[in-house]
Image (cartoon, rainbow, N blue to C red; front, top):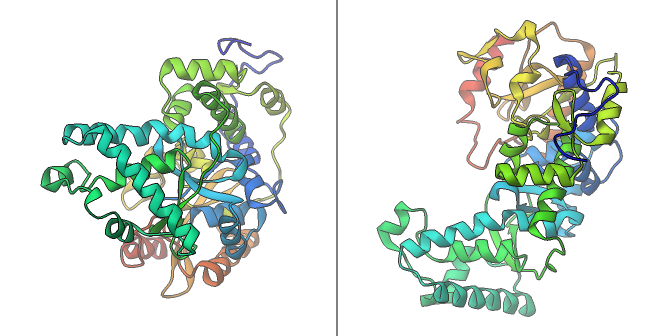
Length: 405
């Protein structure tokens, strides 16, 4: 079926905003449909979890399937899930069935760093030689039982094979040749990056030899597979939204939509089966409350957080910015069936969740706030958005939430 073909049976009309929010909520498994699933299943059905050294992957899995940090960390060690560079060269936590083909999507970003080294006068032969030496060092470390090595250890063992690129290199984001080589080896699945303390909510890493078999999919097949998964995770997306997430060219996007047999329905590109299901979809009448990270897949996959703000809340402001005008959320959201009904932050000093609800609290909302606060207290101790986030850096937002609430 051509991606220019529209679906029939009354599917041409766009969903209203409330229905679209509820449909996305359902497709993301936030309605309880993924309860009891393992981490790889959740990530395969709801979408890869953006990491950036923050706690989003943990809350992603807890909110959908009640999975605790200890189980997540064990899955990382067992390579049932892992953090890998993939679409747009960004790192996501994903399940083992997606490792090989997802890595191929991140390869162009890794290879683009070679152009920087070219401009700094580093020959390709020198890069390839360092790749071979780095891989050998990591293989030797694995054989000897030494385990993963951090960049400092690698530099010491590789010696003069790692070239300093001086001030000019620093300006271009390449102080030595080692980061480029590590990126290339990781994009090929020859090595993997391991969190030094076993946790996903930080950005201190070591590297280990891996040897992941190459993907059987061609680049075109991998792009089609991503498109099919992406439309399944989101329940549908506009052309602009698909291009934001995938970073495909217009030609690549059209080819991937055609390969996924996508159809235009309800004002979006959708998988054929979802187009029909959406036409028959009836939103849940009872409250379904979740506290999510601002980088949760519900918002990040389409970067459409403003669409999750109801019309009656459109003029609400947080720190002088209108919620309905922001592409990215100013803080973590409290959500009911896809509609943002409040904002929250964890205050580790008080071991509580500071929150602002747009309307009077219900018992379901207060129960969920207490449940998530206990999860953070017991499993995470803090809830960082990204690796450099700290209680001090977010104190202004915590104070603003307390004042608004």
